[in-house]
Structure formats: C-alpha cells, structure tokens
Image (cartoon, rainbow, N blue to C red):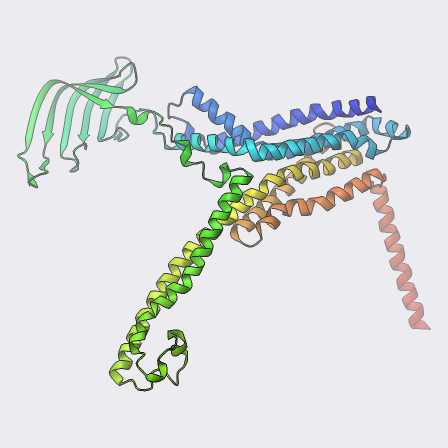
Length: 488
C-alpha cells in the first residue's frame, strides 16, 4: 500500500506544481496586459518592477491554486486510467476510495495552508501590492520632449521644441512659458537654438539657450496692476529645471492599512463591529432629527386642551390641534409645515446616502471575512470534482482534462463572482454570496465521486443509447396500454 500511495503522490505532485506556476504565470501576464499603460514610459527601476510583480503574484494565488488542484487531479487519475494502472490497482483489491486517501489528506493539508495564507500572508501581500501599484500609477511619464508638441510635465513650465537633432543634441526654435508665478501665459522665452542635459544625479535638467528673447507681461500681485511690458535679449542663457517630480515617491503604507483587503480575521471583525456601532448610532439619530425639525410647531400649542401633550400627539389629534387658530395663524402653520417638510426631505436624502455607504462598507468587510474560508473549501471541493472525473474519462495529458478543468473552473469563478457582487449589492447576505459556489459545486463533487467509486458508466455512450431505447420502449408500451383501455 505504501508503494501505491507513493506512486499516486508522485504522479499528483508534479502536475500540481507545474499547473500552479503555469496558472500563476498566465494571471501575471493578464495583469501586465491590463496595466501596461501605467507601467510603460515612466522610467521605473528594475527593483520597483520586480517588487510589483512579486507581490502581485502572491495576490493571484487564490485563483491559481484551485485551478491547479482541479487540473492536477484530473491529469493524475486520467493518466492512471489511460495507462490501465487504475484497472490493475482495482484488480488487486484496492478501491478508488483507498487510492484517493493520500491525496485527500494532502488536499486537506493544502486547504489548511490556504486558510493561513488567506488570513496572514494575503493581507500583507495586498498591502504591498496596492501601495506600489498606486505609486506607479501616480508616477509621471519619463522626460520625453517630442518635436512640435507642447510639453507640460515639468512643474510650472510649458515647453515646445520645433526640431531635435539627436546626433549633436541640439534643439531648434524653442518656446518656454513660465507659469511658476501664475497669471497665465505672461512670461515667455524664445530662443533660436539650445542644448539640454541632465545632471548626473538626475535631479535637474539644464537647458542652455542661444540667441533669444525674454518677454514679461505679468501683473503686480500686491497692487493688482499691470507691470510695464519688458523685453530683453540674450546671446546665451541657462535655465535649470527641477526634476524631482519625475522620481517615484513612495506613499506611507499606513494610509492603506485600514482597507478591508489588508486585514486579517480579527482585524476585520473589530472593524466590522466599529462600523456597525456607527451605523446603529446614525440610524437612531434619524428619528431625533425628524422630530426636531417639527419643534417650531410648539409655538402654536396654546390651547389648554393641548397642554402637557407631546407635539407628535398634538399633530395627530386633528380635533384638538388648531381649534382656535385664526386665518393668519393657519397661513403661518402651512408655511412652517412646508419648510419643515423640505428640511426633513433634505436630511433624509443625506442620511440615506450616508447609511447606504456605511451599509455597503460593512458588507464588504463581511465578504472579505468569509473569503478567508472559501478558498480552503474550494480547493477541497475542486479536488473531489477533478479526481473522480479523471478516473471516469481515463484520459491524461493536457487535452480533454484541460478542457474539462477550464469548464469547471469557469463555472466556479462565474458563480463566485456573481455571489460576491450580489453580496456587495445587498441582494444576498455576505455568507450566502461567498458560499454560493461551494453550495453549487459540492453536490457535483459528491455525485462524481459516487459515480467513480461505483464504476458507473457516466460517459459511456452505449449506456446512454440503451437508456434512450428503454425509455422509448416504455413510452410505446404505455401508449399501447392506453389504447387497449380506451378500446375496452
């Protein structure tokens, strides 16, 4: 038995590792394709790119691991069936259930490890990945001044170069608008030619201009009066531009730590409790705000019969309230009522928006809380789909098993996304939404495992042909019996 267990574990571990890294690589390529516009042309250093890809790959594990388990189990038992090893093992008196036992234990271990990964590693990876991605997306494009195009990425300046000579590094027909003092296009520098170099530390851009003019039509900011127009010429002038804005600045990671994606189970529970308390307090304050909006009606509560009554009770009692009011008093009451109603409508609209946002944030925390468990169970369920399906189809390699694995994984992913979005939108509770895929796939896994262990002809075409013939024969017999009963 130990040799057979080792054989199965060895046959399973290779495809598992291979398919996991292949799936991870495909997801990483999809990420690069999605954010290629945010990465290209910004002069990012290799260490930043490596860190971004490294932490991004960790965030893709929840998608790559279930797919790897599904495909590896399909390939393993498909290869055993295709090479008649599965038949030989059954002939030796070893059932499929006993053969699956070491892989079941391994899948349970992987599921437990996946839970600890979701709870401890994934929040940290999300924090690093999201913070780096945010900084990369905020990063300016690298300094690249094109011919005949106004360039405005240098803070406070707009520059235009008519022609560039790469061999001599010479620029022709240069225009520079200085916006550092505000006031629009009031300061302009024009030069026939010039050269442009960066300092060795890449901190400054030195632009040397030849044969040009400086125009100044700015205002006096203190007296709010226009200065005399100034025009000065120069044979050579050197301008220095600060390029610190082109360097990538890392944002403090503490700003991202409170996001629900960066929290573990205990932190999510604490944040959810705090948000729920705030939500309950906001809900209670709605009644007080509405009642306070009609507080001014107490000035009309002068009847002796109304003394000692609550204002809402007085308003409901039409026979008591307003019995001795005059016409001008009724006009004031109607105007006050309309004003109070508009005020209540505005307050209710604002409170409704605020409460909806709070409720949505609470649901997102609950969804993330349940996500810590769904990955582990998904790994286990997909194993019980892949292993019996591989034993049934008896085909190995990357042909039919890959197609079936992709179909089942797409089904799992679509149901998961549908459940998650429904939970975030409030159509389903967070628990039902996050467990929806497991609820749907668990009966499929149980059914396939039962069919595989009992050697049922699930994919045998002859069996289905016989079943159809039996059904047609039964239908024919039933019709003849009906005719005989009608004839008699």
